[in-house]
Amino acid sequence: MREFFTQMFKKPHIARRIIMCVIAVCIMGFCVYWLDRLAWGTDPCSVTNLALASKIGLSLGTTQAIVNILLLIIVFIKDRNEIGLGTVFNMFLVGYSYNLTGFVMDKLGVDYHFPKVSFDSPFNAGDFAWNLMWMIILLFVFVVAVSVYMSVELGSAPYDAMSRIVHKLQKRLSFKVVRIIWDGAFALTGFLLGGTVGVVTVLMAFAIGPMISFMEKRIKRFL
Image (cartoon, rainbow, N blue to C red; front, side):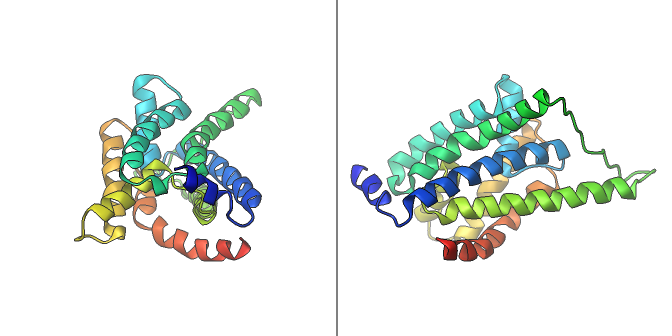
């Protein structure tokens, strides 16, 4: 493990990588906050963590840290090469950035809620278009942030590492299929716990992989 971290700090432009990683995971937490407000679902991992946080009465940051620590134990046993500085940043900064965004909004006296869109009568096309626009913007920013966090190659979040470990333990299913099943299992767990599963959750479970791959190639050129 010591040798692994030593090699990590020898990566070219390590300071740039660390700064980019910290900013990226903080932006991810910011996006999750507003996607949660939009109420069209969040990424599968956050669906479960938000539902758990509501059930046990803790903040998202603390709940996500606990879940990630439990997953990290498995990752540490099965594949330590998945662990790095980026692992730690993702474990704590995404959830606590969500909390910080809410704290700042509260101090500023901003309590904005997106319009509730009902497809029953009467249907408000303007509200739907407004929510759809912000969903697209937030998803795009989230995908870019995730792509940056992955491109700097400083380690994976325990949640992301687990799908790769599961893939390595079997030979039948491709990584893409394993990842969809993994995300789907978390989304279902979150739903059963009372979390909001919506169009954003579905898009992230099925489409975020190809989108990240597309963005990652371009971001790596910067590194």
